[in-house]
Structures are given as structure tokens and as C-alpha cells.
Length: 157
Ligand code: RB5
Image (cartoon, rainbow, N blue to C red; front, side):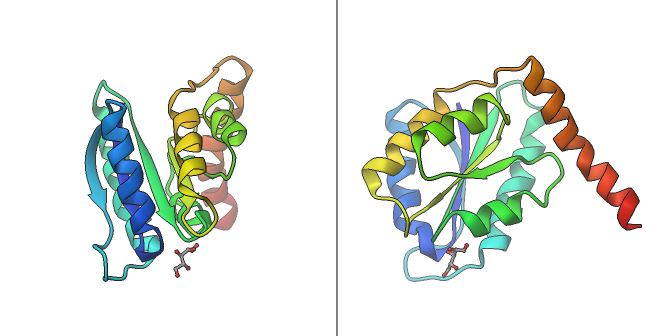
């Protein structure tokens, strides 16, 4: 798979660790967003840049997904989910990682460097990558998630 990777300063080490693993597993890391070691960045800025690139890449036939790391994974997920077309899940276990793909068709996975050990983070990422969207009844529900963007615009205008 093709992957966009990003982190703020709270996720640099895990971003680098998981980038190396993704390459080892045969995936293509398209672009890396976020600061270098010793630098700082606000997670909404990194989430914005990665989501913009990910959505632009959806024109391509080969699917891509996003991996965002911050201290908890939560700030990245909250930020990424503001983008219409992004479905991001912050997860701390392998079962949820599988489910956000099978049921929610999540195109971004968010992990917390201050929450997870490196072995568990690798297991979670692998579980996410090796799962596929189940479709069927979940298609309807994901369609409804996407419909909320438009509905929310109408009720808040
Ligand atoms: C940065 O210190 C920290 O707040 C951030 O990485 C993340 O945990 C926010 O959700």
C-alpha cells in the first residue's frame, strides 16, 4: 500500500520506527509530514497537510492511507476528522485497528507515542494494514458518515 506518514514533536520516534517497518513490509511511503528531531510542530497543522495530500491522491488508482502519530493519537484524529472525506481512528489495540478498517473504512490511523510501546504500535499498524473494508451493510453506514459533512453544513448555516 501507499502511505502518507506524519507526526508532531510528540510522535517523531514512533513515526520513524513505523516508517522503517512500513518500508520493510513492502509498502511505499509517499511523503512524511512533521518536524525533525529537536523541532516542534502543532498537530493540527500536520494533520491538515497530510489529509490534503491524501485526499488529492484519491484520484490515483492505487489506494493510499495516512498514519498520524502524536502524544496520544487523539489530537491528530480530532483534527483529521474535520476534513470531509477523512475517516480517522485513534486506536490503542489491534482489534480496534482491524475494525476501523473493516467497518468504518478508516483512511487514517492515529497512534499515540506516549500511550503505546513500540512492539504494540507495530502490531496495531500491521492489523490495520492487513484488514480490508467489509462493504455490505457497512457501506451504507460509511455513506451516512460522509453525509454528515453536508448535513452539518446545512444545520449550522
Ligand atoms: C503535544 O505536546 C501533545 O499535546 C500532542 O502530541 C498530542 O498528544 C495531542 O493530542
